[in-house]
View 1: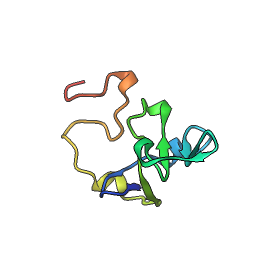
View 2: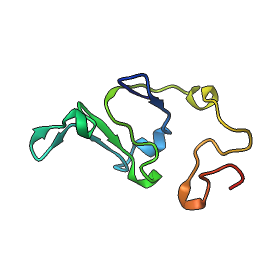
View 3: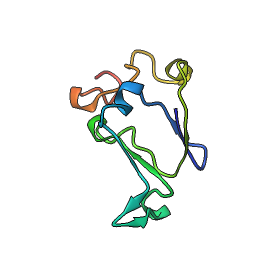
View 4: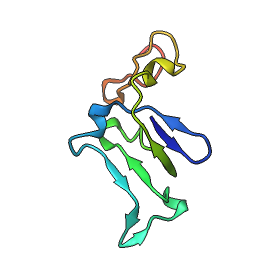
Length: 91
């Protein structure tokens, strides 16, 4: 689970966080990342269509129950993959 200031959370499977697939950004051009651009830290997940990227990170923790706790529409996959056209209900 990825937590952001303001109460926003997003679940990202561990496999999608490992292996150089994601970036945890805290600096840009040698300077601290500004709040306007998601600072103090920002998670970038390009291989998931940036859908699971999060700004204003306040914490990350491992939680095996994260997927089960989320509310989602019945029949939708846990991790929608836009490249497979799983963005909307009925896709």
